[in-house]
Image 1 (tube, rainbow, N blue to C red):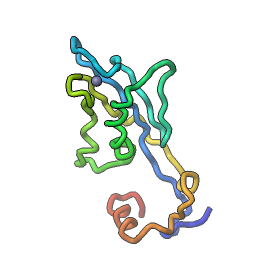
Image 2 (image 1 turned 90 degrees about the horizontal axis):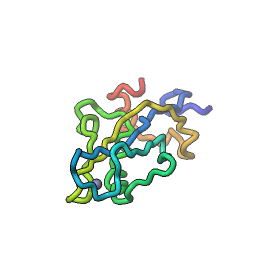
Image 3 (image 1 turned 180 degrees about the vertical axis):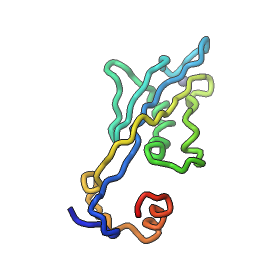
Length: 135
Ligand SMILES: [Zn+2]
């Protein structure tokens, strides 16, 4: 394996696996077809639904922009670290989607992209150092 600009041969990085679960308040009319406990999981870029369970495309649409950020390790003070519930996009529906980080999964940079690590600029490397992600 080639070394990156930091002189490291380890090109691994970690992302959280996510579970997105439907929360339905009791005695409320649910308009998006969700049932309490419906869910999907995300592992890397792969989304998995349980057999025979659907998921509203409108609900998927509102949660989708947040998933890539929730997969990543974020600063403890970042709202992305603390906030996990997303309102149903139908203003008349009281269901919510809860994004749960379930575990960290390790990936190899060279297995997910052809872009070499040496393309990282000095600012990115300095940011990684500040967060203790590299030495
Ligand atoms: Zn809904």
